[in-house]
Length: 304
Image (cartoon, rainbow, N blue to C red; front, top):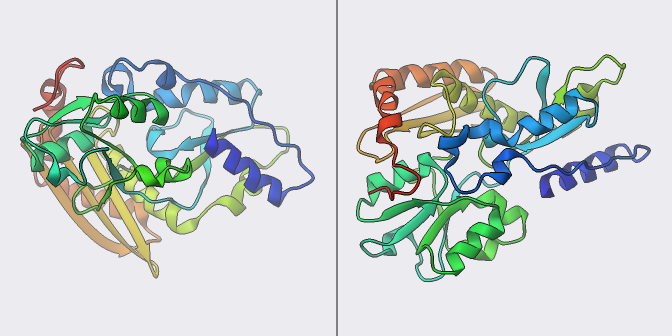
């Protein structure tokens, strides 16, 4: 809802003559909170209802966290704009400990992400990782009740909702490589034939460097069938027209991992995505991902 309000404010400033209404909706991703996303359908759970509303003409556009958007959109839908990225890093949140390094043996860490799970398990095998679902307030409430010693969240969400004080430490990409699209918002539209050019109307909101970066990241994820069901990270930065793209795939327990990095012109993001994917293939990335389904723990079992 914060994201929708933010986009409405931006559009209202651009087009003060327009009346912009928000159609609040609850998706299956919001409703199913007792199981890990990887077990109930993954990223599409957060966008399907919004796409139906656009297809039926009840809504003109939808605002998404880009990391929740499937790599393949249904026919007739497109991403019309990618807004400037917020902090893409993961955040360590705890009431009692200052960092992952400070957690004692057997401490329980909560996360909804297989990517975070694998990265933590690889570096901190003495910690217990358990699923964590729900909106931000729900997750923080579970931490405050003592269900977890710490939880890992996206820094962007905490900052956008005015809760940066809950962040005890930010995990740098070298430690916890972000998910494809993390920290970025995207606006999705449906094709229409009423003469309204939504692409042109939304173009001023598009941030080119962010759009280039996430295009490369999403290409890596797309190559490997990216979803919530595989531990995959992809993160690009753009500086003076040059892009640095890093990516990683791993087993959920962190025991096997492949990582790669490429640099090149930011104007060719998908080619860079293909290059880094090819480097990962050379490290048996597909074999690593092939064991994910059997390696992932059951929803009610902690990951070692």
